[in-house]
Amino acid sequence: MTEATEPILEEQHGVRDQVMDALRNVHDPELGINIVDLGLVYGVDIEGETVHITYTLTTMGCPIGPLIEQEIMRFLADVPGVEKVDAEMVLRPAWTPDMMSEEAKAALGFF
Image 1 (cartoon, helix red, strand yellow):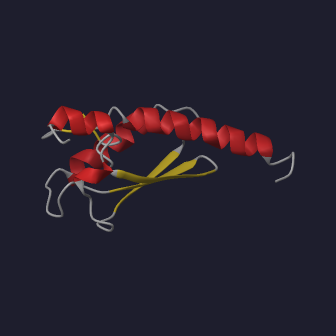
Image 2 (cartoon, helix red, strand yellow):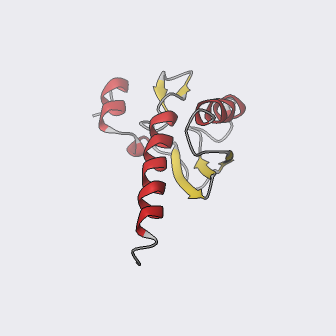
Image 3 (cartoon, rainbow, N blue to C red):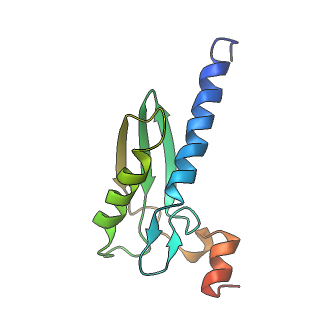
């Protein structure tokens, strides 16, 4: 890594942190827990002013997919430096409760 690329990487890291914070406002309406703590966010990639979010749902046929994507778009629209959001729902790897944060597991009674 060169000195010229270090500020870019630091800036992307800062934007990534802001994106993850914004995604904590997106809640699964059935479970009442945010998609980050549920482990539904599989990836956040930043390329310039475009953020690509890879996410999944708790079950394959879950009807809330469009709602989750709308909420992702809504909350990321307020993040400075993000001009475009590309949200992609994936089904692999399949989500399991093991992917949840400890806080989410405790809130849902998983121990």
